[in-house]
Amino acid sequence: MSIPHFQIVHFHFSVPMMEISFLEVQSAGTLYDMELARQQFKKAYKQHIEVQLEKLQTVLSKEGQLMVFFSKSFLDLLNEIDSDAMEQIRQLVQQERIILVGSCAYSSFSYLCHPLLFQEEVKLHQQSLNNYFNKQATYFINTACLYDNQLAELLQAFHYKTVIATANSWHLAGRQASQLFISAGEEALQLILANGDGTAQQTISLVNGYGSAYGEETFQVLDGAELHELYYKSSEEKHVYAVSLPISSPEWQYNIPQYMANPLQKALVQEGRRLMESKGPQLNEADQISMMCLLQPDHLLKMHQSSQSESYQYFINSMNILTAIGLRNA
Image (tube, rainbow, N blue to C red; front, side):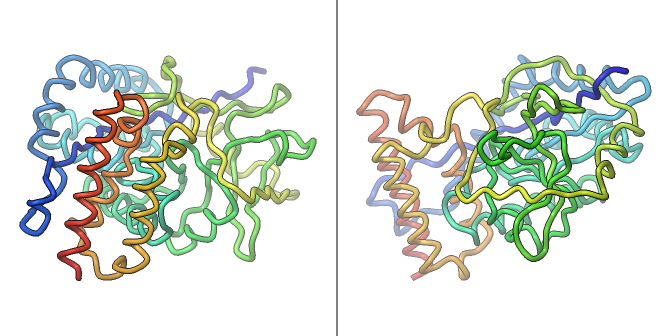
């Protein structure tokens, strides 16, 4: 009997930020650039995205299911650029051939910035899935599969049943990753661990469809019985998986320090956290989205992988955006 191989395929498109000077912070309008995103998406669609969506449809042309995460930005842009492709995805979702996976709307690291910003981003993603598919996801995976004990607590309000978490040998404490786990805390959620050990009864891989930092892998479907078994297996015996500090997936291309350890990155995240502490509850949706887009992995990497002068310019522009948000919510 073959070992079931489960995949979560990720589709995301990063939204660029407006470039504003310090002299413009008091008069700045929308701080993320959807017009530029449209232009970039059209080009990427012709070169890469359309082919990836065709592969998705081809692998689902016969019987089978596939677990897929679509970011809000990806869905919004796809709906504008190719409504026919969007309709085909919608039909696959309605037929339960695509099993929707919930996450952060802009696939950002808001979880590492502030709980309120993270919860607002999860809410936006739920609303997006409801708007496009009239469905809610029951599975949740954080950006880069980030997981610690706090995640389950923050997700309680959203009625997710299962969280995909990163398997870590130290936290497993000798147990098999294939066992069913539950989160620490009073209201536990079911956990399914990706990146399991060699003795696992199933394998779960995190795969790039487009725009994520996961590895490339051929899409593979599973049958409904396998997915049903994944959810209900080991229901008699559940083990608590306790993780005190955030861990991320080894299948993600870069480790978390590359997004957070640079002094410029640290300063940006700290300023974002300070802004959320002081102004968070009063921010409108546009300003919340601006902060989420600032924390997209691609944006944070620009302060790490670019030249020193370019990194500093990205940082200054990002701080100007945070200043603009703070001023109009004074």
